[in-house]
Image 1 (spheres, rainbow, N blue to C red):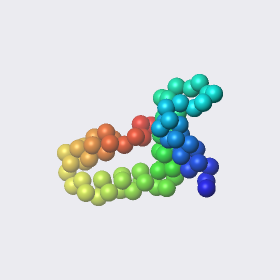
Image 2: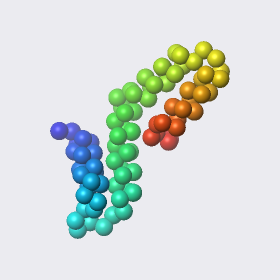
Image 3: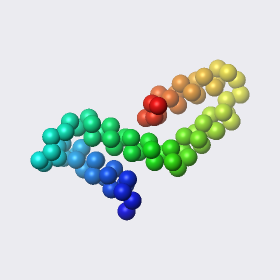
Image 4: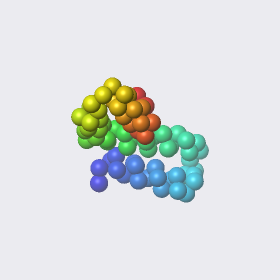
Length: 80
């Protein structure tokens, strides 16, 4: 099992439990770390490039492109 998948699964197990015994870290930091791993894997796999290509392919007018960008940005965990 790749290390990223292992870390991802462990992060969500800790979130489900609510704390990591013997380890004092805020849940928010662990959640952010897990999301960083998910976004990194999506970026490496080319997911964001595919989404951008689809948006540009279907946006025939500037207003449609603007709406697609705004909605796509709002539904994406990627903020950088």
